[in-house]
Structure formats: structure tokens, C-alpha cells
Length: 250
Image (cartoon, rainbow, N blue to C red; front, side, top):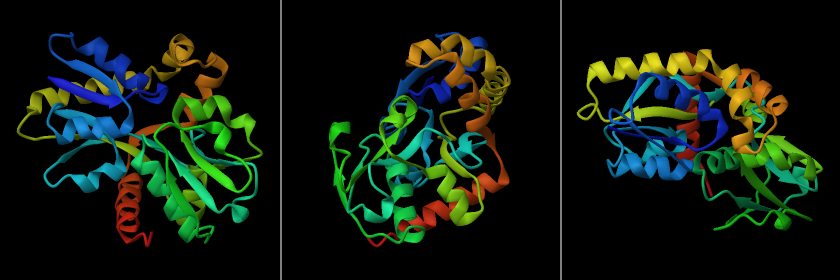
């Protein structure tokens, strides 16, 4: 069976858990950029995938796996708007081509929290030198962890979502096709994900270098910043986010 998930360090606990519980012959695990994870599921190249929440609008008949997700209870430390000026002075935002969800979250916050109308620019390849003057950029994932010190202003989108809504945020959820994944397989996957989350501190220490991070940076990120439990409040956050995403007047 084919399984796709986001290729950032925050999914590595899931990968480690799955690898401990499944052989490669049973489960083919493919790390991909966020948008490609959703595409692999949409095309049914994958039977189950960890997809950005914004991609849920592209599906009609899809099931969500309970219990686990990629979420945050405030600052997430890897999904930012970076700028060299205060966000009130920004007139252009460069979007991240890999993450519809983060782009949508940035637009929602600019409209509802900062109340700043800006121009949105889609960039095929992020040129970080373009984030200057009145131009800001959405930067996500492991790259954001490594370059945030280069910018005078670092707006953590998880933190500002919490300020706006008093809710946690859910960045990615496990989605699957009911006809392609048996109940037995779903149960085994849940057990594997639980195992991975339980050992995320070990993952931070042993895998950080593969992602260009130090263990000192990876440990608090995986054990404090990222929250893996798909709680009722995180489901509420998904519902509200999708509602606002459809209402964006941009």
C-alpha cells in the first residue's frame, strides 16, 4: 500500500513509527512536499496521506484518520511570514508554492487580524533575497527554522491564529479512501503513529542532522512546538479555517 506524507522533520516521528511496524513490502512510505502529498491522494496514487488542511477542499469523498495530525497550540516555529518591516507596512506577500494551507492561513490573518490588504505573488522558486523593503514572504518547514534569524520581523502564523480565534491550529491531517484501506490496516497504522509520537524525543536527537538541524533545535521543536494529537479543538480549527478559506475576498 502506498502512503504519502510531508517531507519535513515534523513528520519524522510518524515515519519512524511506521517503519518499526511495517515492512517495505507492506507499506511504501513516500515523503513529498505538502502540495504533492495532496496531489498523490487526489490521484489515488496513495491510499492514505498526511495532507495540508487547505487541500481538503479539493476532495469530495475522503475519510479523516482520528487521533493524529500535525498541529500547534500557538507558536509552531516553522510557519512564518518573514519581513524586514512591520507587517502593517507590507504591501506585497510572496506565497510558498509548496503549501496552499500556509498561504491560506497568511491571507486569513492579513484580512481578519492585521486588516492589511496586500498584493499576493506566486513564486515558483522562493528567492529569499526578495523579502525586503515592503515585500514579505511565507516561509515554512525546516527552511524556516534555519533562516528566521535573517529577518527583523518573524510572524509565527500559529501564534497569530491563536490570538485571532483562541483555538489551536491544525496544519495537516491524515486522510484516506475507505475503499482502499482496510479497518485492520487503519488500526495498525494508528498503533504505529502512536509509537512514533511516543518516541519523538529520540527521533529529534537521532535524525536532526538529516534535516540540517542541530539536536538542540530539533528537540524542543518536536516535543513542544509540534502537537500530534488530533483533538476536538483541532477539528474545530479545521472547520473554521476551511470556512474562512472559502470566504476570502482575494
